[in-house]
Length: 307
Image: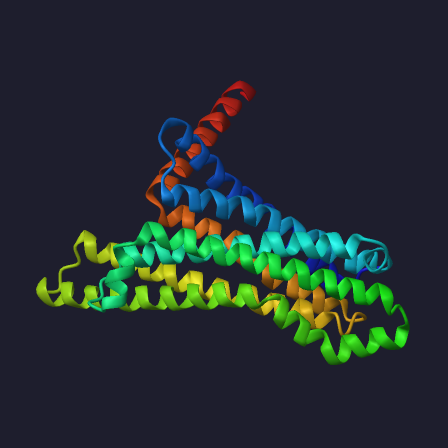
């Protein structure tokens, strides 16, 4: 029987998952329609991939969490843990790759630094993404091999004492090793986002000093971009905090509130960032306004028919 607090957490997590699917589904649909009309751009490819990977990611987070809450025996038995582990690697790392690619793409396109390395990378933007794709494939392959080794050891040493020892002494070390690729993409994304904020802040100060206190459209655009980037960084950090909480739950499986809190914190990022992207991207924002306009028209027609 769930307590009131646990029920609230579950309601929040389900609501977050619905918002995440709707937001990311909308981003993917708009870019797919645009691809059918025109050639798929680099930013369109990144946004579409990010949306699809996040839909899979949020459903995996919810499915994995609910199994551990309501049917932990099923989670610990058979091949389910193996399937979830492999799907987690694919969805989590691909989501991180697309998010990092988006950060790097905006950084190289918008930022302005005189550093030689930055200028060299800026002139080779189209080569950076394939390089990151290579890192993603290598990271996934290494993780698959490592997961297979862990699961094989688990099956061979199937005694309770070994389980307790492996959980307490080596569990966190194994989790860090499994998430080295994710940590790399996370660090890279944070660095590029912070550098882009610094570049925009410097440019904004120069514009304000040149234009005597007047805020033109370019200044407002830079301020808006900085707010979007800061929001992204906060959500990104919350996502990793949520994952860390869910990992720590594995050592105290009797504390279900800890798992629910971790799920709630983790799920903020997939839906929150999708709506930030919709509001920050002119094409997505215009498409969302058209959808809202259509919904209002449908509502008015229903009201007229009812009267």
